[in-house]
Length: 117
Length: 115
Image (cartoon, rainbow over all chains, first blue to last red; front, side, top):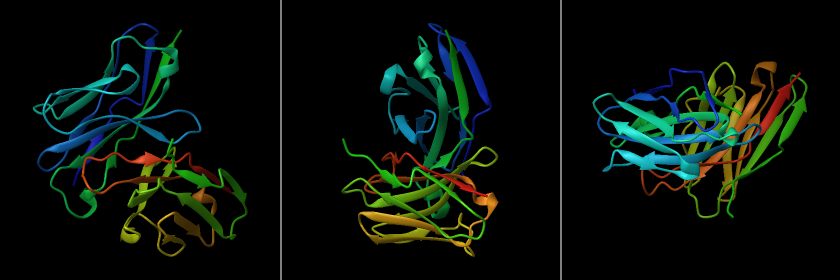
């Protein structure tokens, strides 16, 4: 079975500082990895994804994520946080070769990011 | 700007009543997903359709929930009878199944409150 862990329920960072939201995964074979963001009273929005190749993936709004196969991690990063980045962030995984329920995305529990002015 | 639309955005009902939530996927998308989000359980997949056929509804309580796609532009999620524990935000998402790494596009959700 595939799974995602987001070890931090809450991350606080000062505006202008770098931010990291952590994600580790478990899947059979190679993974497809995703980050989504949810603003209050909104649906999830796609930020970025890892398919293959370069371990550093760049996405929307200045976010990037680093795939680390040996550590089975896919941490979300941004060099300089904005107050407007405050939202709920979800990591998700799907195996490249999958069957049954593993055909679907498995989401983590979410990390609430608060950027303080 | 193509978007997934959901109606209603908010629904308050009494226990025992029937609730129907509707979703219009992005035109051309052939996969539709229903999710439920609560504080306690997070984001749960309820049902999944591809080319209007239900492929996986293992996450859905079968005795009271049902999901259908009458046509390619409409997906419905019905709860009958509703119970207070069904209170949650229900999201619909759509996508393309041509690649396993294609992202899903989420609607704004229906906030359901069952009294």
